[in-house]
Image (cartoon, rainbow, N blue to C red; front, top):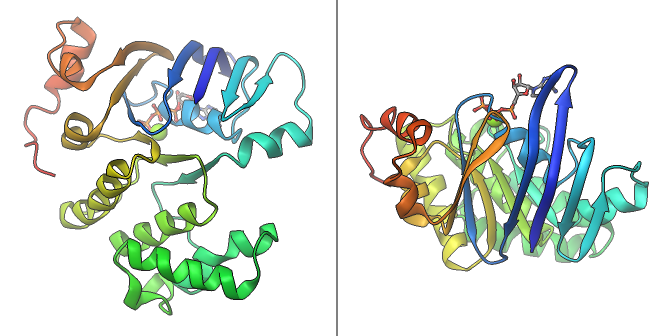
Length: 249
Ligand SMILES: Nc1ncnc2c1ncn2[C@@H]1O[C@H](COP(=O)(O)OP(=O)(O)OP(=O)(O)O)[C@@H](O)[C@H]1O
Ligand SMILES: [Mg+2]
């Protein structure tokens, strides 16, 4: 389970998360929607402490931290081990091959030997449809392929939660579709996914839960269908932007 209570995060004078509380069930796919600047990335980054809120409580897979006191290194480590993040711009190590990118974290963690990590990395590349690209360097892969390597790399540390921040925003529609297919596979396997995206087809068809943020507050937290039929003025205005796009996945 992932839950936050009364999360508050400011940058300077600007309050970016304003008392956010929510609870995500494990095994579910949660999609976070909201306008630009509403705090989606900041919220996601709080889940793995890339951002540290000023106040509130985070419970993640049995570990709990209260942000009103300074976190110890041990607390940060214990929270971070529960999740892995996939970024918009892939962020692969350019000097490592696909399989080396995927195997790196498990080797550095020291939990498995190099051989076993390499073997598992090959299996994960196969899972994301890149079994034949293990020896390729990132700059010889398409954006969609790089992002699938990044997903395999996130899976390699066996996290309870996979966090995605606009994983397809940098991709052309065709490449977006190949990444979305991998996300759909993970959702079907009942992995716990938290996805910030503007892909409304994915949100509507795959999400178990939609969170809509506006101005650092949760305006909606629930099932997809009522969200897409919402008469809330703010949500309806947000959805209108997407009426021009079709709902193809
Ligand atoms: N490191 C930072 N320093 C200062 N301000 C920041 C920082 N990160 C985010 N912000 C500000 O916080 C607000 C929320 O940012 P955030 O990136 O969480 O929004 P978002 O919903 O992810 O937007 P987008 O859809 O554009 O990615 C924005 O006004 C942003 O400028
Ligand atoms: Mg963002």
